[in-house]
Image (tube, rainbow, N blue to C red; front, side, top):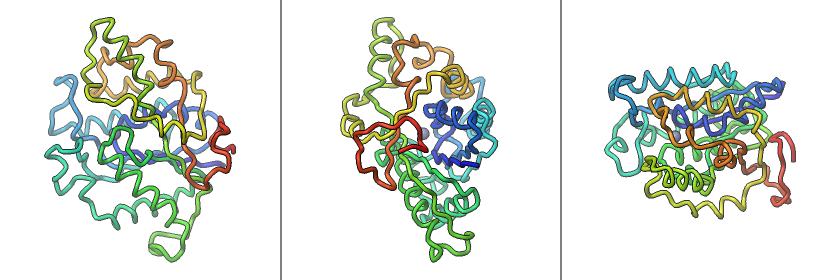
Amino acid sequence: MKRLLFVFAHPDDESLFSGTMAHYVQRGVQVTLVCATKGEAGEIRDPSLATPDNLGTAREAELRCACDVIGIENLHLLGYCDSGMDGTPENDLPTAFIQADPDEVRLKLIRLIRDVKPHIVVTFEPQGWYGHPDHIFTSRYTTEAYHQAGDPTCFPEAGSAWKADRLFYAALLLSSFKTIVEYARQQGLDNSDFDGVDFEQTQELESKITHTLDVAGWYEIKQSVMRCHRTQFGDDNLILVTPRELKKSIVEEERYIQVDPPLNQPKLQHTDLFDG
Ligand SMILES: [Zn+2]
């Protein structure tokens, strides 16, 4: 059985790549999702759904809802707290993920990799999509753990060495969101979530993409996964309400960079993570 391990930081990060997850679950691949935090620093769209004190519990339930929709049976929470966006007070909390002891995080991830024995590991690209500190740290720690898990001299107490075949970075092209922000402007809808987003910043990232998966067939599942995250995405959420033809590049394609082993011909696009 082929095994795929995704490592993300918050409940809802998986939603943007849930087409890939559903695709492989359907093909009989064992998909495991690791989430570093419960997203405690997220916003609460509807105060009837959660309070700041119980947001983590609510978001864990939302993540379990998403896993049920996708068909993921193996979910692991690393147990850290959301560090918040860069420059917010949550950055300094002792329980924040970015304050955690690096060896402790790597040990947890190495233990998981050696236990799950994935053939493919996927995490954020190093810029963390839009610079969220938890995304950046997750990318860094997962990359280190991917390499160290295969070295029997690293953390021997964390089980027998397991070298996964490939490491991928999930790439989110902010430029893809331009069309929905434009739609919001035309319709007079709130697009403040995208205030300050640099839609052009991803050109360099785009040139590194090695794999683009067509996930159009998983559109309804992806919409349902987003709807699980009620505290984050209300019924008026811009991605949810934008007509499908204007958000094709967000909802019908998911992009990846194969980082290890590096590909000789990065220009040649592959359509399957197990291919190339
Ligand atoms: Zn996130």
